Amino acid sequence: MKNATAIFPLETYSELVGAVYDGLLESIPWQKCMLRMRTEFAANYVTLILRSPRAGDHGLMINVGDTTTEGLISYNSHFYAMDPFVGLPSDKMVTINEIVDEERWVAMPFYQEFLYPVNVHRLMGADIVLEDGGECRLRVCRPRDVPDFSARDKALCSMLLPHFKRAITLHGKLDLVESERKLYAGAMDRLMVGTVMLDQHGRVLQTNRQADVILQAGDGIRIVSNMPHATHAADNRELQKLIKAALGRHGNQKTATVVDAISVVRNSGKRNLGVVVHSVAPSEWSEGKIRPAAIIYIRDPEHKAEAPHEIVRQLFNFTPAEANLAMQLANGLSLEDAAIELGIRRNTARAHLRAIFSKTDVTRQTELVRILLNSVATMGIRETHS
Image 1 (cartoon, rainbow, N blue to C red):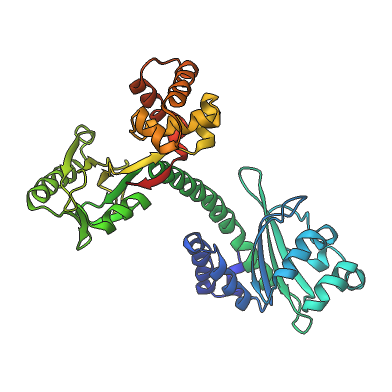
Image 2: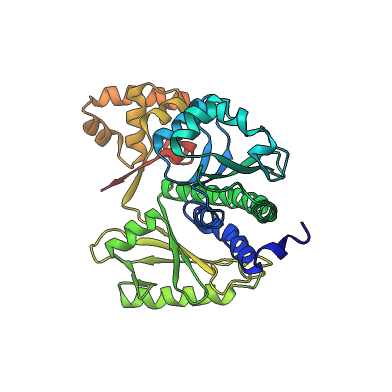
C-alpha cells in the first residue's frame, strides 16, 4: 500500500481520516464519515457493525442508506446466520468475489432473499479486531448497475482501517468515562446535592439536575450572565469572595483541597441553602482553555430524601408497617406525628418502633434516623418537597 496514495488525491484520504476521528464527537458516531464514504465509493449502503448479532442480542450497527427498521431486524434475526461475507481475514479489505465466484454468489439464498430486493450486488469489507479482543465489521455495498470495486477503492478503504480501529477503541474509552460521569451525577442527584461546575473565569460549565431545580427557582441563588449569584447582597459578596478564592487556588495542588462554605438566605423565608465552594485540581496534562476550575455544591434542606419503601424494608428486614414508620421518622417526624400521618394508634406505633429498634440494634430514635440516613437506602431516594 505504500504507493496507494498515487491513485487517489491525498486531500481525499485526509478528509476521510478526519471524518473518522470527528465521528467520536457525533451523537450517532461515524454517521457523517460513512455518508462521505458512500459518496466516495459510489455505494448505496455503508455499514459499521460495532457488535454482531447473536441469540438474544440484535447487535449494534450504524448504517447509512435507504435502510428500514424491518430490514435491519430481519438481517439481525435471520439473514445474519446466512451471510457468507463474515469471518473475513483480520484487518484486511476484501471483496465478495474474492470469497465466492459470481455464479454461486447470485444463486445464494442470502443474495436472492435479502440483497437482491434492496439492489445490493457488490460487497467490500473488513473485520477489524480490537485490542480488547472485540471485533467490528465495516461493509461497503454497491448496486447492480455500478462497476465492481477497483484497486483504488480497495487501497483507499484499506488505509482507513487502522484509523477506524483506533477511533473505535477511543470511543469505547470515552463511553466508559461518560458512563462513569452519569453514574456519579446520578448519585449526587439521589443524595439531593446540586453541583455547579465553573471554569477558570467563574462561568458555569455544567450543572446537574438537582442544581437546575434550585437555580431555576431563583430562591437564594441564581445564574446571572452565566455566573452564580446570591439574591441577597451580603450573601452575594461572600459567595463571590469564596468563588474568587477557589479559582485562585486552581492549579495549586497544596491548596486545592481547601473547602469554604456559606449559608444563603432565601427570599421565600424557607430555611437557608447550604453552599460549599471547592477548587478543582487540574489534571497533569490539562491543556484546554476551557476546563473545570471550581465546583459549588448546593443543598436545599427543604428537599427531603425519601428512600423507596421496598429498599428500606429489604435492608433492615422490616415489615411493610415498620418500613413506613421508619421512613416517617427519618423525615423528621416525632413518633406521635408519624402515627397521625400513617393513621395508626400511638400504641401501635410504639410496638412497631420496639421491633424496629430490635432489628437495627439501636435504643434511641436519633440513632435510628442516623442509621437510616447513612445507609445505602439513600441511593434510591425520591425527591419530595415540603
